[in-house]
Amino acid sequence: MFQDAANRLILILQFSSMVLSTAVLLPFGAACFADEKEKGIAVAPAGTDVFETSFEGTWFVDRELKMSYDALIAEVQLLEQRVSNGDITATQARDSIAALRESLAGVREKIDKQKTLVSAFEIVRQEVEGRIDLGPEKLLVVTADRIKVVGWSESYAKYVVVKTVLSTGTPVDEHLAGIRVIHEHKVSPELVGKTDAEMKVWRDDFLNPKEGVIQTPEQMENKKQMWERHFANGERFMPFVGREVDSLRIEGLIYQEGNQHLSYELKRPEGGGQFGSRWRRSADLTLYVPKCTALLLRGCQMGMDISGVNGHLMMTSAGSQDRDYNGSFSIRDHVGPITLSNVPMDVIERVTGDVRIEATTEMTNTGSHHADGRWVLFTPPPHRLQVSQVTGNLTANLTRSKLHIDGVDGILNVRNDFGDTHCTIAKSLIAGNHRIVGQSGLVSVLVAKDAKIGLPIFAATSCGSAATNLNRDELDDLNVTYNSTEGIRRDWRSLFTALSQNDFEARFALHERPDQIIADRERSPGLDLLSVAGRVEYIRMDK
Image 1: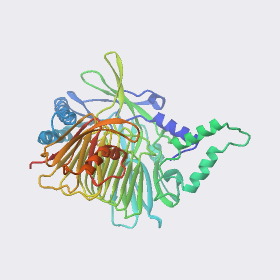
Image 2: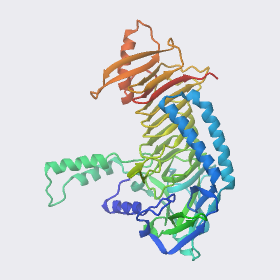
Image 3: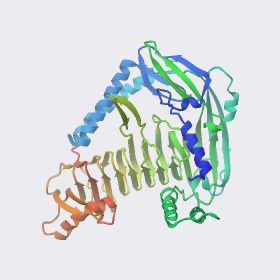
Image 4: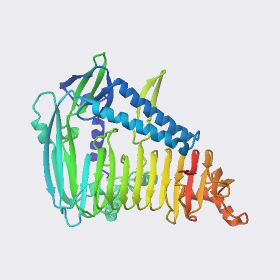
């Protein structure tokens, strides 16, 4: 939610004090908050490499095993890139990728058994739990970055918080006490957004000049534009807005609340090492929730495991205080709608209800390095997101994701601008407008051998490629040049469900369809697949 000027400054200070636990070198600025009186030192096992990091420390694994793991990862990525480039079809690559993933799982299993945690600190834990009797509205808001949520049959909610504090041998009782669980029951616009009436009052106060201040028409217009850009379209979680909610948060995990960074050094027997800093305090929250009207999770950037929840689930990155790019994020066995706003997610499966995903911010650990005399700002490959067994509609707006869809019973409305989208269909689609669109990524649909889509198919690209293994009497092709409603003139090459040669009206309507698909305007029912500059595939599996 939006903050006033003072709160916004606090948020900036919080952000500037954050240090990712995955950092290999001490990030610039972290030393300002590190306790230089305490420094942890440890030695890594000989013949090992870093596999992954966590709050507790760094996991090391046998160097040859790590090299095997990295090589398999590279093979999978190369094969997926060849599919995205159109060098081979997804069907041709399917068995190879499955074999590589099986080998990868085997190597990962060996790594999990053999990896060694090396920590430069003593790890002290303390567990606390409490009960929350939900108010009559049955609305719960939780702010946490690492959380496990389990649905249960009791009438109340229960939380279990595991506090973790790093130490170099000094007492940590003060730090354990500094991690506090706060429960409140009240109307909370700062967490869920303002009502329409409150928004109007806020807007009027923002736009109207203060006493003694004269604003020119130009200044007024600038303020209106600022309002529209930064405030008018902010997140509002309507099931909660204007209502009393139960809110749960954990205090004491940011610098302003007493948390600190501890410097560390991990030495290698072969020479060299790893330097950095970690937060002294951390907390893991496990929440058991009854059937509820709605559950809002704020933060959601360190790790998320949600299962068996019954109610409208909403998640947002707002309120996040830290981030783990190696964390695991999943939702399983959910009953009710799901609405996600810019939170990382790996798996969404077995959902009874509609799923709506907004992920327009970057979800990978971007960074920079120097190479060949140049300063390079880089972005790693996108994360994989699996959405499967959804008894409802799937609506997604993604900037860049490696998206896999399987078993969605409702309407598909997916935009994945710069990532690859793979969709497997095993039965007829529900009547309506289905679309999967992108700017430059692969759009690949694999249809089970004996499945009948039951809707017309339209697959188009402007400057990429389109492919199918169906005969021409099933999917015909059309090349057109068309001016969009934005005045952009583009060439389109398309595959479409074959029409009668005399059906001129239907053929002419296909000329406008790419523009209608991109804008998601009203059009005749069908399955629409479009990638402006990428590859589009519609493949019927042979087994």
